[in-house]
Length: 156
Length: 189
Figure 1 (tube, chains in turn brown, orange):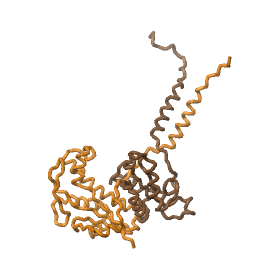
Figure 2 (cartoon, each protein chain N blue to C red; figure 1 turned 180 degrees about the vertical axis):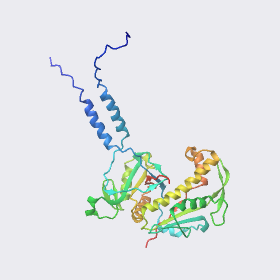
Figure 3 (cartoon, chains in turn cyan, red; figure 1 turned 90 degrees about the vertical axis):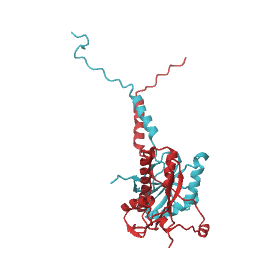
Figure 4 (cartoon, chains in turn brown, cyan; figure 1 turned 45 degrees about the vertical axis):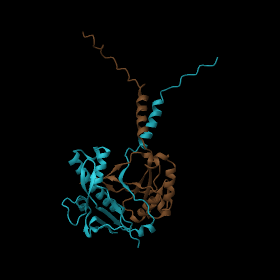
């Protein structure tokens, strides 16, 4: 009777999968763009402290990282349990900090150098002694803009 | 004539793309790094430092000491970390011009005219054995105190949040409430 009525009982045609690659590629590009790959493998355990007054580190390319914490269990046989500094992929000593900062600075263009930030990722149970040493080294190498990396604390 | 090359099948394209997609899904960390931003003072040679020991009046300094047991001594009395913010705010603002709280100096500030700007300085000293977590919590409270004062001023004067003000207005507010947290080097034993 109605001319829109399908002649009954016919099976649905299968959904075309031709556009599936396009959809997947779209997702793929989204993730590729938004990804920040972990550049270093952590050799130290870092449990960040909590804070409320946080600023975001926006320009990733301007940030250099310094990690301080207890060596991971597999390194504890060699390096012991005392907190150590990690620069790039290796354990380092306090004296290496200046060289690291200079190397980081060399890697940036001249205009970017004055906007460089050093992000300190320090375990909350570290004693201040080693942290102070690192801070003095940073002052000596004129890397004055620092960021104490911390997690967001939920307000009580 | 060369044989015609058969068309490359596109059916496996989706699988390849899926594989890549899963790889990126797994390796992605979306969280943005954030933290407490500070500026270190310029490096000064210790020898030149001893010569010009500049004197700051006792009432202008807010002394915070943290010992190796992570206890706080604020202006020569024990304090807890949760009291610190209020104490620091009271010190920096000095609303009733108290004798024991810092002096003020009339300064010309754009948007505000002549305002009394505090001469107070917060001095933070820690022990070498202080835990970093405690140290950062103290720093956080001090920064929070100054941020709250700025926020209040921005709300009452401009009717906007400090973050929404333009650069000049922010600068004016920063002149009134400067972020003066000085960190003395810990005493060597």
